[in-house]
Length: 119
Image (tube, rainbow, N blue to C red; front, side, top):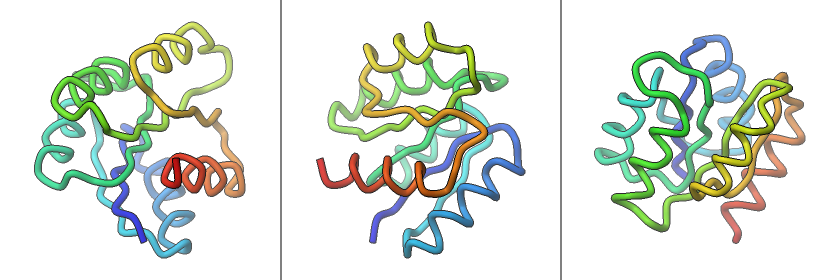
């Protein structure tokens, strides 16, 4: 299956996503902020990234832009809480392929990941 980088400053969210994606047979790498995400992306070149928007050190939009600058074909799905529409629009304009609203349902995560991976 795919190698997926999960980026979220909340360990609980990473654990939930890892659980959902591992059950689908994906290999999961974790990062806890945007800076960490950019470094892990360079080191592992994953097939897909799930990226939280609000994080310390470097937020998800900055990390998305940094990854896309070096890897134009990077596939990134943004994860955001309700009410962050402006940020979601900016993320899509910056190259995100999809977004998942938190708290997320497992089937929505699986559907988004499958759709973006097969695109």
